[in-house]
Image 1: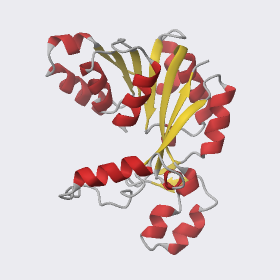
Image 2 (image 1 turned 90 degrees about the vertical axis):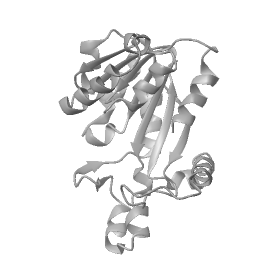
Image 3 (image 1 turned 120 degrees about the vertical axis):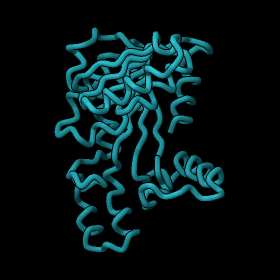
Length: 233
């Protein structure tokens, strides 16, 4: 997914431009740190205190120049308007967060308001149109049948969370002035892999196949996750 994001950045912004980045629900800061290392000015927003502590510890081990380019704020992604002025960022990330939000539309609208004109909104969501794939491929036929008409699923942490449909999010993005520019599938072939499994010897070939499938119809529509990129008008 990092390659997809870098592709969108390269295609939308001038070479060498230092972007103002907001990473909402930054987790332990992996993506935020990667972008700070690339020279961008990054703000990470995370409500989980344990994740915040982990991200700050990771940041503390970085060179001074990178530390100066990144700040971490403990707060809720639904309250971006409390922390920032509209139009403050060129790039807003919200990866793996919306599944935990019962009513996502207000949050997505708030994220879009943070974007400057021409700014890029990057969302990573669970694909509701493919919820039957994981149980079906695992041989859980009853769960697969239930999943066809549902947008709720139990994740690997044992939590009941929600998924989003591509058509619904496309309409949402259009309605808030950040229409969908492009989208990718993520984890087309690898969603049933066991957590913590060792990567195969031919991992580079696997990643190439995943990357190709995530850009190609009809495969990308069956992915476990969707990576959507909207652009602020």
